[in-house]
Length: 77
Image (spheres, rainbow, N blue to C red):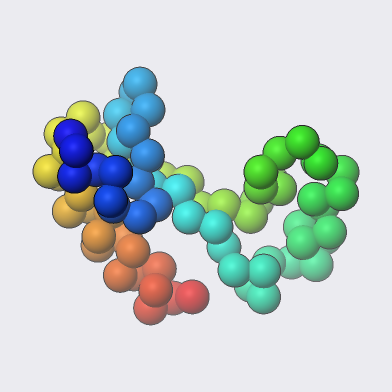
């Protein structure tokens, strides 16, 4: 479990592992970019984050899936 802390965009929650990554502002619709003023207490505004359940509780599987998703997002963004 100690290796999970060094994997970017990977979060461990009670239901399992999540992949959470912010979408670059240049790719967001202008209304989503400006919605942060309506949600000042949140870290991210709605629609500005890619959040995917990895549907696993196994750390090794989660690391492998997160690294694949990171590579795809790096290519896409």
